[in-house]
Amino acid sequence: MSEDRQPDFETREVHAGVRPDPVTGAILTPIYQSTTYVQESVDQYMAKGYSYSRSGNPTVTALEEKITSLENGLGSACFATGMAATSSTMMALLNAGDHCILSDVVYGGTHRLSTRILTRFGVSYSFVDTSSPSSVKNAIQDNTRMIFTETPANPTLKLTDIAAISEIARARSIPHVVDNTFLTPYFQRPLDLGADVSLHSTTKFMEGHNVSVGGSITAADEGMLENIRFVRNCLGSNMSPMVAFYTLQGCKTMSTRLKAQSANALAVARFLETHNMVERVAYPGLNSFPQKTLADRQSSGYGSMLWFEVKGGVASGKKLMDTLKLWSLAENLGSVESLVTHSVTMTHADMPREERMAAGITDGLVRLSAGLETAEDLIIDLKQALDGL
Ligand code: PLP
Image (cartoon, rainbow, N blue to C red; front, side, top):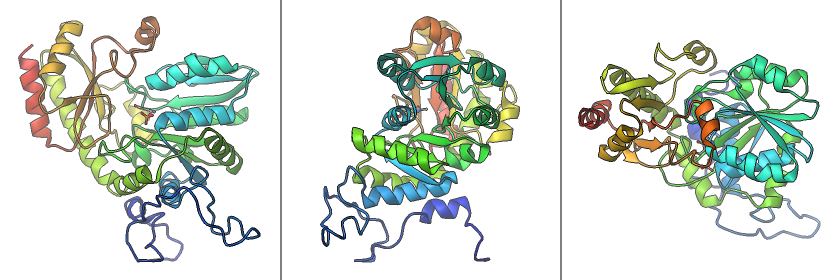
């Protein structure tokens, strides 16, 4: 192997950031469960890189190195949750009087943070259809200091052309932050497409086992990274070493899980298209998906998220969700367990109805996160629930 050849993604997801423990040889990075680090002398303060676990922790550092390698970034910062990553990034890059463009379809918590919290600190937001680059261009104001997109978006899966929006942002020196939670760096790398920050709820596919909540950002620019880390230290929104440990292990199987979960999602989506009780199905891997060409261009896979609407409206949707056995009715996504979510009453409950409807988050939308069970079992369960409507 040539010396300067970068190992493949699958190799890096196992090995990047991790080296045998220098004291014991333990193959897994230990959980450095310590608040503080003893210093050799006043003059050698921070000689080993750590002072206090809010400012930095070796287990968290190992995870940050791994994510940086997978996202092809300059550096990463890990957070207590995905929302801690989003709030810290917004607080680092936005000031009172600034304006931020946000995808009109985003995770409900991002919408809530923007409209209910950060507006109180003088930041204004425009919710824009970021699938249309010209709409983004037209929404830019003199004081626009951030474009924040989520693609595929939760829950409608609307896609944003990362390269096109990054080009518009770069021309005006506006940072472009991409929430990459739904596809992970295995399928989509926003920084390679010109974005400045790639953000994750590591709670989802990165950790992948419904064990922990966490978040991360990876930046392409040193100044931006330092700024976000500074805010993390001030807010105390850092990831714990235990969560970093779980996420380090989860990341090692990310590509394997995503390949299998995406294959399940495609099989489930194809089945749903054939059922007479299904009104419509959305999955970026289906030929019927309106933005399939963009999906093929900017990502190497379609992920494990899909949604559908049943005939008979909300009442039918609720009955279906209540009669599924293998699919758990739950608020998470991206785990090895298959999950079903009613976005309107769960993840997007705080979003005003008109805004929700305008963004395509309809009352009957049933969101699915395909797990690692067999496609056959998942389809049998959906069929019995749909047949019973
Ligand atoms: N971004 C997306 C796309 C999400 O779906 C979520 C949570 O569902 C978040 C961010 C927030 O992550 P967390 O729940 O880890 O705070």
